[in-house]
Length: 167
Image (tube, rainbow, N blue to C red):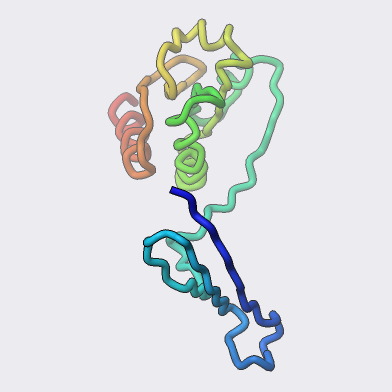
């Protein structure tokens, strides 16, 4: 089916005292298709986003250590290590989850991400087979291990349960 589009749009000035009388965030368009599909004019309205849906702003600290073992042994709190790969969809899903968990549990745990493609020797050492894999280290040694993507609440509950049960 061939579709032909013709469009015209009115976009008023961003000046609030617009001479057109439209809100500065109103946009109207007249679109027509040569198909039989119904099409409605578009109205864009700038509404404030509640804080629940605003993106989480976290400043990640990129740090360098002599070795992974050095990081684990010198940490003053347990370390949650996320073994991931950039091509892994569930791993990408976990990025904002881990950022929020890092902020929420900042006094209880340290969150570290290890790219298994860049550091295959570390992945081999801890026998990483599925991604994402999470290992909680305490006193430089593996303490708990689990795989798969989790939501924020599920991950927080898993970490807190692990730390309280196995102490």
